[in-house]
Image (cartoon, rainbow, N blue to C red; front, side, top):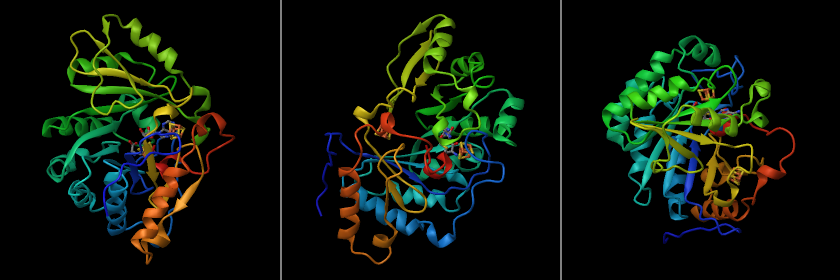
Length: 325
Ligand code: SAM
Ligand code: SF4
Ligand code: SF4
């Protein structure tokens, strides 16, 4: 089978896959998961690593060149280092990355690096240990920061720090600005998306408010964007090692340049973060012909909506922890 480059109906080149490998997590961020966690799906409904790897080979044939592992928390799934290694070995895959809360990253950073993980996004919503613990319900900020330092130490680049913007927590941007003075990290403030979880709705802060706060820091330059900048806009404080960025998801959600597909841990291909359209891959992976799987991938790309964000109504059927962001 030859490698193709797949464009959707709106001529967007689809080359990026977000792969959720578990919906379990070692934290319970208030805006993402209830304290009791999400109801665990039967083991047999979840994709095995063999199935994830088989799918990824096929997706690579369809034009996917970059894969991001996410969750739930990807580092709680046993064998994740071997998975990174197998995905990195796929000839067409130029980059394997991960979005993690960083709690277990200190433990795995060296092995992940050797397995081929060259860059990582770490979610840290506050640099105040008490607020961090409150937001995550029991997380220790020092563990997440140790994960960030370990990623930098092994040479991962870029290391990005994702911050969901919430009033009274991450809107205190000075400590994050200081983080970019001390470390070569790219902090990205992401607008909270209440469509996935109502609890923190009143704590929403817009990207515009955050931009004003960043500009008020003074000595702001517009730097070159780091690798994989995607939809973020970046700023830099003069003399800093890293950058500050903004991802505003409430207005339009960058649909014109959307290049991605998402695969849930239970084998459902989602065409858009804000659409509940899902294509079940498990039957094709379990006993189907490779051609069936390719047809489903092509169908997902063909049916990817133009701008579902503007048209969505009501809540999304899955929680963010079941999609992976
Ligand atoms: N557990 C990993 C982590 O926290 O980085 C990966 C999965 S998590 C679902 C992926 C990203 O989604 C995180 O950066 C998280 O902050 C973000 N997220 C979760 N719920 C969100 C929401 N309602 N609005 C905006 N971002 C959200
Ligand atoms: Fe877990 Fe990530 Fe959701 Fe926080 S945002 S509860 S770390 S999946
Ligand atoms: Fe892509 Fe859907 Fe997000 Fe638009 S709303 S950027 S189409 S995932």
